Length: 84
Image 1 (cartoon, rainbow, N blue to C red):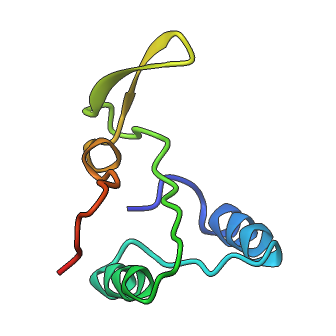
Image 2 (cartoon, rainbow, N blue to C red):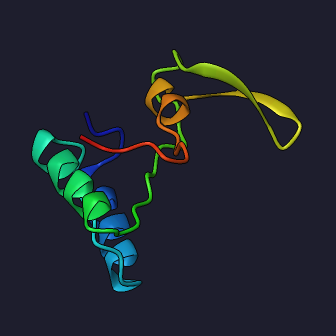
């Protein structure tokens, strides 16, 4: 579900890619590529900073109450955890 016009999405995607980032869409294929990168020792970043539908998890962020998408709150690195 896009929350902005396609041309804005394309522009932001272009700017991120111009800084050397490989971008993946939030699709099953994109998730598989992210998991593959992690298994190969790569680093990933998740841009999940906005709760567009306002049903996220309440958190304190820089001293202020806000919400984050539930997936961002539940996906955290754990030492010694193995991906399957």
